[in-house]
Length: 316
Image (cartoon, rainbow, N blue to C red):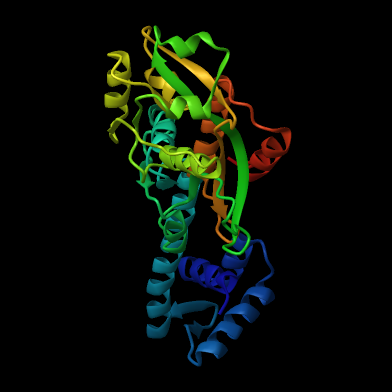
């Protein structure tokens, strides 16, 4: 049973005349007769009673007509829903991020995205285990930090580097170390520091660098609140080490930042998605908007990554 045969059948039901139906379908009358006969043979029962030049629908034909109506209505509904998805008038977008700065980074583009595509449902899943989010099919793509020990290929994940982010020394504008062009990591760790807890991604970079240099991290205050960290720094309670992204978002006139060296603290922000999963139009549109926003904000995305991103969002 083919869709084409069912289309022929429905037209013949409406016309109840082989010649008229064939003309409407723009095929020959013998072709129509043959296709209807093939359909009847497959079902093993007549669909029409031939009454000379006239025909009438049999009981079997009435059943098929009713079901065909449902089938073609479902096909039309499916087509319309897919068109709505392509035009971003319906659908859901789920983005995975690591907790902390990356959740803030992605969330910065939610308003612009909503204003452009108000009918879409958007969800940001913040989790330390993005791999499980991918395996459970809970996210369309993710923004993460590149983990050197992680085998992305083995997990069927495509990775596109976005930009390299620097962690900065941030302190009250009157702090004496800010007079230097850059500050040694060891000197920073000797100061009273206000840092994120050890489970935070930013803190993990700091702790990892300290271990490599055989240094100790002993913060004066630990808090997961970005606002609290900047308020304490503003009140000159202590200094902090924080990402450039957050520094740009929360810095005030009484706070200044400086580069850290020996070693510099950096991390690579990447876009992740499954190689074996279709990237829907809602996801492509968000990636396009986010990349444009990153470039406008001065983040440097390599030419190779630009090409990969353009290839990914080609039909958005």
